[in-house]
Image (cartoon, rainbow, N blue to C red):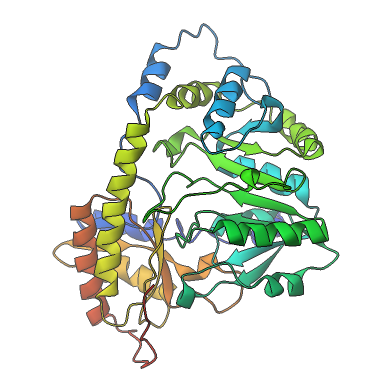
Length: 408
């Protein structure tokens, strides 16, 4: 029998989706599953984009330019000016989702055997993409005790070798919701300049900031012209995950030129998704104001409930729509599967993403899980009721006395 490739064999399963068969089986048993495992918002996609698709007069749905339609890229330059980011149409490549944009960035920065430093816990697909490309993720562990803030810059210095090609961050963070400050970004600027590295920033959640926090793009930091690579997507901003429309942006002309080879090899991004994306840029600010307010209410609901559960440690995320939580349990993979296989409360249960899949360091995340607060507050409260009752009866509940934690 033919054997599959080693690179695929060592690519980890997604912690976000690997338990889907158990969720499907639970639904077949008549159990309602609250999906807190995946960042799929229930917010309606703005009608401006949907209308543009409906009214598009396309005799032929043709290829676009490999970098994306010029009209869309021109709109994107206008869009990013709202965030103090001044770029040209030649400094971006439109991609089939943020995932493809991230792949273009990684492939353009590193070769097989090279290393990319990433603060963990991190978005699980960073590990999946890197391993499939034979690129090594070098983790630096952020701590729940300080809300998963940027680890000390000395920790980065200790990990840098002649194989290190880039540092990769997500800001605001998926999975923790942590928002990097300008001071932290400037510390990263110093280290990438000192060691001649790229700084890849996944900024997909830039529009969701709470408690007066404001997002700063790596492209808005002076002196980062040759070092910064930004990845973005319309998926979360406009609740258009299924459109698969992203972009990679850099003022490093050589990187964009090299990435264009990859863009040309896959021919072009989706023409239909670009029509949608271009129209969505006209979405009024009132939409974001309303959506952010709604997410903030959901955030407060979930954080308040979690922080009042016995033995649960939950920081206070300032961005995105995730929180990374420590539970008094023996094993998050077992617990999350048990919730779907063995447990229900009032005919319902909860699906979460086990924390182990968001770390590269062996053994970490066994008591943690990511929660996406993307459901309405009523559903979130019902989900928290389920979770609270589950923790009372889970056979693998930890009896450790070291569970106290001062929330931030």
